[in-house]
Image 1: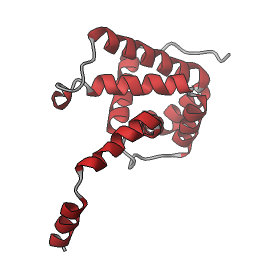
Image 2: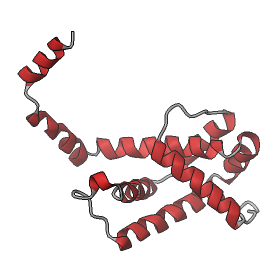
Image 3: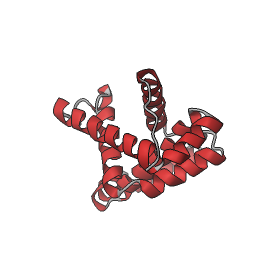
Length: 160
Protein backbone atom coordinates (compact mmCIF):
# COMPACT_ATOMS: atom_id res chain seq x y z
CA UNK A 1 0.00 0.00 0.00
CA UNK A 2 1.45 3.40 -0.94
CA UNK A 3 2.53 5.91 1.66
CA UNK A 4 -0.27 8.49 1.64
CA UNK A 5 0.22 12.12 2.57
CA UNK A 6 -2.52 13.63 4.68
CA UNK A 7 -4.43 16.30 2.82
CA UNK A 8 -4.82 19.56 4.67
CA UNK A 9 -8.36 20.78 5.32
CA UNK A 10 -7.87 23.67 2.90
CA UNK A 11 -6.71 21.32 0.15
CA UNK A 12 -9.60 18.94 0.85
CA UNK A 13 -12.08 21.79 0.49
CA UNK A 14 -10.51 22.86 -2.81
CA UNK A 15 -10.64 19.30 -4.14
CA UNK A 16 -14.22 18.90 -2.97
CA UNK A 17 -15.28 22.10 -4.73
CA UNK A 18 -13.59 21.07 -7.98
CA UNK A 19 -15.11 17.61 -7.87
CA UNK A 20 -18.58 18.94 -7.22
CA UNK A 21 -18.28 21.41 -10.07
CA UNK A 22 -16.99 18.74 -12.39
CA UNK A 23 -19.67 16.24 -11.51
CA UNK A 24 -22.51 18.68 -11.74
CA UNK A 25 -21.46 20.33 -14.99
CA UNK A 26 -20.61 17.08 -16.77
CA UNK A 27 -19.03 19.15 -19.52
CA UNK A 28 -17.70 17.10 -22.43
CA UNK A 29 -15.52 20.02 -23.55
CA UNK A 30 -13.23 19.78 -20.53
CA UNK A 31 -9.48 19.62 -21.29
CA UNK A 32 -8.07 16.11 -21.08
CA UNK A 33 -4.34 15.55 -20.89
CA UNK A 34 -2.27 12.40 -20.68
CA UNK A 35 -2.40 12.23 -16.87
CA UNK A 36 -6.09 13.07 -16.54
CA UNK A 37 -6.80 10.40 -19.17
CA UNK A 38 -4.86 7.89 -17.08
CA UNK A 39 -6.76 8.97 -13.97
CA UNK A 40 -10.08 8.71 -15.84
CA UNK A 41 -9.19 5.19 -16.95
CA UNK A 42 -8.26 4.23 -13.39
CA UNK A 43 -11.47 5.70 -11.97
CA UNK A 44 -13.56 3.82 -14.54
CA UNK A 45 -11.72 0.53 -13.91
CA UNK A 46 -11.77 0.92 -10.15
CA UNK A 47 -15.33 2.05 -9.55
CA UNK A 48 -17.61 -0.85 -8.73
CA UNK A 49 -21.28 -0.98 -9.65
CA UNK A 50 -21.99 -0.14 -6.01
CA UNK A 51 -19.72 2.89 -6.34
CA UNK A 52 -21.52 4.01 -9.51
CA UNK A 53 -24.83 3.67 -7.68
CA UNK A 54 -23.46 5.80 -4.83
CA UNK A 55 -22.41 8.44 -7.35
CA UNK A 56 -25.84 8.48 -9.02
CA UNK A 57 -27.64 8.67 -5.66
CA UNK A 58 -25.42 11.56 -4.59
CA UNK A 59 -26.06 13.41 -7.87
CA UNK A 60 -29.82 12.85 -7.55
CA UNK A 61 -29.87 13.97 -3.91
CA UNK A 62 -28.08 17.18 -4.91
CA UNK A 63 -30.29 17.82 -7.95
CA UNK A 64 -33.42 17.26 -5.83
CA UNK A 65 -32.56 20.52 -4.04
CA UNK A 66 -33.30 22.49 -7.21
CA UNK A 67 -36.65 24.31 -7.00
CA UNK A 68 -37.74 22.77 -10.31
CA UNK A 69 -37.78 19.35 -8.63
CA UNK A 70 -39.59 20.42 -5.46
CA UNK A 71 -42.92 18.85 -6.35
CA UNK A 72 -41.55 15.60 -7.79
CA UNK A 73 -38.47 14.76 -5.71
CA UNK A 74 -38.42 14.67 -1.95
CA UNK A 75 -35.08 13.48 -0.58
CA UNK A 76 -34.96 13.39 3.19
CA UNK A 77 -32.10 15.04 5.07
CA UNK A 78 -30.96 11.64 6.36
CA UNK A 79 -30.95 10.17 2.82
CA UNK A 80 -28.97 13.19 1.56
CA UNK A 81 -26.47 12.85 4.42
CA UNK A 82 -26.07 9.14 3.70
CA UNK A 83 -25.51 9.88 0.00
CA UNK A 84 -22.87 12.47 0.98
CA UNK A 85 -21.14 10.01 3.32
CA UNK A 86 -21.09 7.26 0.70
CA UNK A 87 -19.76 9.66 -1.93
CA UNK A 88 -17.05 10.90 0.42
CA UNK A 89 -16.01 7.30 1.14
CA UNK A 90 -15.93 6.57 -2.59
CA UNK A 91 -13.78 9.64 -3.31
CA UNK A 92 -11.35 8.83 -0.52
CA UNK A 93 -11.08 5.22 -1.68
CA UNK A 94 -10.60 6.12 -5.34
CA UNK A 95 -8.25 9.09 -4.95
CA UNK A 96 -6.40 7.96 -1.85
CA UNK A 97 -6.06 4.23 -2.48
CA UNK A 98 -7.17 2.69 -5.77
CA UNK A 99 -5.97 5.49 -8.03
CA UNK A 100 -3.45 7.12 -5.71
CA UNK A 101 -0.53 7.15 -8.16
CA UNK A 102 -2.67 8.37 -11.06
CA UNK A 103 -4.18 11.10 -8.84
CA UNK A 104 -0.75 12.24 -7.66
CA UNK A 105 0.64 12.35 -11.22
CA UNK A 106 -2.42 14.11 -12.63
CA UNK A 107 -2.38 16.76 -9.90
CA UNK A 108 1.35 17.39 -10.14
CA UNK A 109 1.44 17.51 -13.96
CA UNK A 110 -1.93 18.96 -14.94
CA UNK A 111 -3.28 20.56 -11.77
CA UNK A 112 -6.69 20.38 -10.18
CA UNK A 113 -8.45 20.54 -13.56
CA UNK A 114 -7.35 16.93 -14.06
CA UNK A 115 -9.62 15.89 -11.19
CA UNK A 116 -12.57 17.75 -12.66
CA UNK A 117 -11.97 16.20 -16.08
CA UNK A 118 -11.61 12.69 -14.69
CA UNK A 119 -14.68 12.87 -12.49
CA UNK A 120 -16.66 14.35 -15.38
CA UNK A 121 -15.90 11.18 -17.33
CA UNK A 122 -16.90 9.02 -14.36
CA UNK A 123 -20.11 11.04 -13.89
CA UNK A 124 -20.98 10.65 -17.57
CA UNK A 125 -20.51 6.88 -17.39
CA UNK A 126 -22.63 6.69 -14.24
CA UNK A 127 -25.37 8.77 -15.88
CA UNK A 128 -25.25 6.56 -18.99
CA UNK A 129 -25.64 3.50 -16.77
CA UNK A 130 -28.55 5.18 -14.99
CA UNK A 131 -30.42 5.99 -18.20
CA UNK A 132 -29.80 2.56 -19.71
CA UNK A 133 -31.32 0.74 -16.71
CA UNK A 134 -34.50 -0.91 -18.10
CA UNK A 135 -36.99 0.80 -15.75
CA UNK A 136 -35.45 4.22 -16.33
CA UNK A 137 -35.26 3.64 -20.10
CA UNK A 138 -38.95 2.62 -20.11
CA UNK A 139 -39.81 5.76 -18.13
CA UNK A 140 -37.99 7.90 -20.68
CA UNK A 141 -39.67 6.08 -23.57
CA UNK A 142 -43.11 6.76 -22.06
CA UNK A 143 -42.78 10.32 -23.36
CA UNK A 144 -43.64 8.89 -26.76
CA UNK A 145 -47.25 8.35 -25.65
CA UNK A 146 -47.66 12.11 -25.25
CA UNK A 147 -46.28 13.08 -28.64
CA UNK A 148 -48.72 13.30 -31.50
CA UNK A 149 -46.74 12.33 -34.61
CA UNK A 150 -48.89 14.44 -36.92
CA UNK A 151 -48.47 17.55 -34.78
CA UNK A 152 -44.72 16.99 -34.61
CA UNK A 153 -44.51 16.52 -38.36
CA UNK A 154 -46.53 19.70 -38.98
CA UNK A 155 -44.34 21.73 -36.62
CA UNK A 156 -41.21 20.48 -38.39
CA UNK A 157 -42.66 21.45 -41.78
CA UNK A 158 -43.42 24.96 -40.52
CA UNK A 159 -39.79 25.38 -39.48
CA UNK A 160 -38.51 24.63 -43.00
